[in-house]
Each structure stands twice: as structure tokens, then as C-alpha cells.
Length: 142
Image (cartoon, one colour):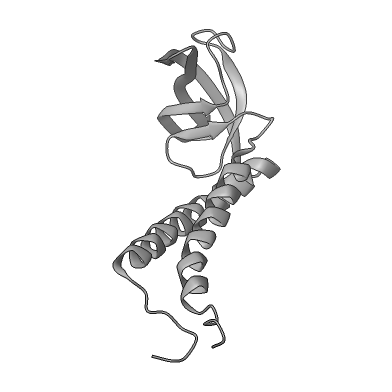
């Protein structure tokens, strides 16, 4: 072992693996999140079928499910990102675009998902760097 280095323990390795998992998750979703931010993708229409809601203590989160159509292409079971219980009614058709993200399409306003993706990336890189930085910290002069 070199002077000024500390050996990585099992806990440090678990932290690094967890950080790498967060980085991988962020990188996988970065492209669709940036496309949603810029409003880039295949444009078409979303036809609302039903609203699905989940109750949390003091909060309700809802999404409209339906069909996205663009030309001859159809995605029958997708959610329109950013919708709430009162946003649509069954059968209503609105403009939307598809970034390729599984299970979601976006309205003309796009999305701010990139913020969460950026936070995941920073957290993952921080978790990877923390044990490595600690292990290479200079030993006290003696």
C-alpha cells in the first residue's frame, strides 16, 4: 500500500456500485429527457381514455392513459406526461409528441424531467467519488 492511501472496504465498494447504478440510470434516461425538454420527437395526437390516480397521504397523483397516434404508427397504452385529474376528459384529443420513452408521451409544453436526471447523475458521481477521494487523502504528516 502506498503512503497516503487507504484501502477500500466492503462498504466503500457498495457505495461505489450504488453510485454507478445511479449514473447508469441517469445516462439511460438523459436522451429522452433532453428531447422532452426541447420538444423533439415524433408529433401526433393523444386520445385520452381514462385517468389513473394514486393516493398518498395528503396528496393525489394522477395520469391520463390513452392512445398516441402519429401517421400509421400507434401506441395504445401510454400516459400523457404532466396531466392531472382535471386536465382532460375521456375521448379528448390533444397534440403530443413521442421521444421514445417507454410508457409516456408529452404535450406541447414538454417536460422538466431533465432536472431529476441531472440530480441523479450528480448524486451518482458523488457517491462514486466519495470513497475514492477518502482512500487517496494524504496521511497526516508525522
